[in-house]
Length: 485
Image (cartoon, rainbow, N blue to C red; front, top):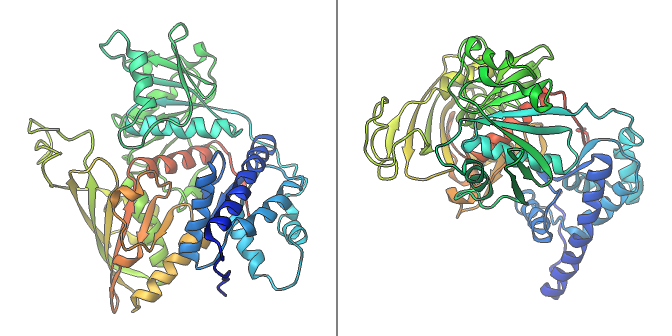
């Protein structure tokens, strides 16, 4: 049932009233997060540390994709009821909880409904996990974005603590200052959200109050984390240099390191984890894991959804991928075929291992997918085109509505976003925290043949998936409300 509110007689007056409510929501959201470790979300979008306009835009997004006139008038009393409860560490989706209340026809008050929905979280004694030390080995595109995410989470009372970054020392005498500058300013993702202080005496970066030691080393063998007060750390290797178990085990030999996550596809028998799909395979005894690739993370959730509903006989994946640091800016020697040609001037046909890698997360699709990639002259945001032969016939409207429901209401809502904009282009998805965003208007269906278009921020969206894997590996798991019926 679609909920509609009448158009306001005075749009500006309505805006100012909603603006005031959003402003009042900010301290409540912050206090819940800071004092009780309660995360507040809006259809999967984290509302902690958001501005008034960002909160209002989050509400507007729901109205666009849910066809429900959800506004601050509806969510504010629900948030008040949440704040009045004695909650333990949980994640609450304010948008879906409010929408559920709007559809409830029992005549309950907001407080009674919220109390009923969050009854099992009231007075929760679930212990907050022990503080977990994390180390980044490598400080490139993914390393710096994971740093931003880790600092953001630490500021909200999360138990994960980024303690150190390991990298090779550059030739410039002011190396630490240059590293701080790269973290502070990013040509694609904008400015760091906060402050960064360089402490050359301790060789540290102080990011929003978090002291992060910068350790210079040419190999893992040179590092002793315990010398810096770091123990039992999970090492996030974003160099891509080592990909098999023997090579990555170098990290485990370092004093103070206990586990490793690789931000690239792994070789051999190492588990390749696509969070939301097969993270249930992560076991406490696992020492080395891979977070797979950005493209694998983008396509697997949609493939899983399609397989569950329609079945997938076979298909082809074509990725239109932003250029990466591995390519040359202008024509020069490169060991790889075609990659020596200028990334800024050419579309470059290359291969992708993502199609084969799908089988590690979804064994049912082994041998059913082929894949290729075209690198294009854009610095970020890519697109995966899935050309699938389904197990049954369908139509565009049915398929799109199914994916919309999956994106908004299923366990895959962190991984799959949904777009119904006729004007969306690649830069609109910079900063997306989803593994991919399904472009519903581009869908093509004919019988059991379907062509699906999925945008993905191959840097930031993938980094979010890495951090989710990191939390799971550390045992940081939160109950999510409202519970599915």
